[in-house]
Amino acid sequence: MTTKRFTLQEALFLAFCACFIVITRAAFRLHLNIPGHAMFFTMFFLILARGCVPRLGAATLAGLLAGLLCTLLGMGKGGPLIILKFLVPALIVDLAGLFYNGLAGSFVACAIVGALGAASRFLTIIVVEWTIGMEWDLILQHALISSACGVIFGVLGSLMAPPIVRKLTAHGLIASRSH
Amino acid sequence: MEKWERTEKSGFKANAFQYCAGNSPIHRLGAGWKIILAVAFSAAAIAAREPWMLAGLLAINLAYYLSARLGLMNLWRDVRFFLIQMAIILVLYLIKYGIAEGLWPGLRTGCQILLLFLPGTVLLRTTEGTRMMRSLKKIMPERLSFLLFTSLRFVPFFARETREIVMAQQLRGAPVGIRYAWNPIHWKDQFQCLMIPLMVRALKTAKSAALSAEARGFEDRL
Image (cartoon, rainbow over all chains, first blue to last red; front, side):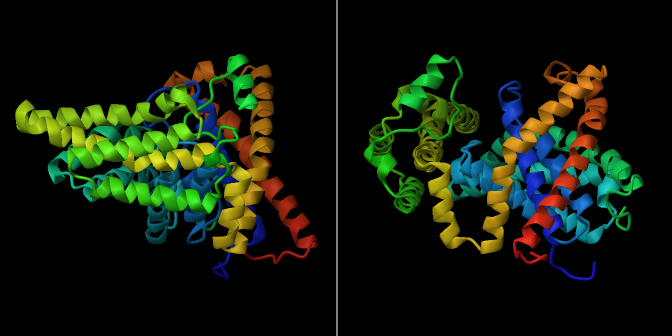
């Protein structure tokens, strides 16, 4: 980590992670109608992005690009506000990575970050409904109902990341210093 | 519109919030103007509290949506998610305050949420990706727009790659595919079979694309 800037290769890999989030979202929305299932792949690829590119801002860049791509391709509910749905979990992944460098290789850390990241959908709901003037207890109840499935999927998705990161590290495809 | 009708005839359902080709005045309006309109209408939705204000705003939003000639079917596809949210909010209000006191605040809040998002839906429905990108390019840093366009360019490439990997793994007898996705027992195997080759491909493609971009004079650091 000699410099804070991403190499072109790293940045392109993060852009590809954003691609994968969009592709899986598009593929599964046609087949599964379970609320919150998109969080499975979102959290998986965000943690994988951080695991493969162990620099501050890696997940955030992947999340921002995924949000912009989804906006451009007209995917997801909420119009342009969808950027927040990717950006906030990505910020949580990066923040967690800042405190614990071996995040992507640890099941426990991934599960916690997966739950927190998926629960960040709370935040979007809270911001929108607080702006409208809804009462706090009703906002929290609504956020809980809307995000519960997402949290379960987020945890499951993030638990899929460590084996992949470990295998990629073992084969020397990514640097081993962070896991 | 013709393109849209073709997809309808072919049996594929157009997804909610996706661009619909057309030649309406809203389609011809610049992306920047549509963003300004979306922000203005959404701000009005937050401010609206009285029934007459909400009714007026709803009428304006519907007129805006329908003047884009998107049709009632598309309107249904776009609002159905918000109708579910409206129902949840209404039920929460009714539980807390009862029918007499909870009905109007529940309806008002649900309506406000719908009106907050509807103008953004019109923006997505009537603005082609390329036009939106051109507008984004003006406000976005050059490096970020390079990455955005590259990732957009690679979406079909990786979709094809994923299909090929799935096919190859299925030929080897791996439990990969949508029908196995329903069963969580297969998830770990699916991930091992699908994600590792995909990640290896992504890492290699990133390396060659970076080399190619550097050869064209791009900085090696972003």
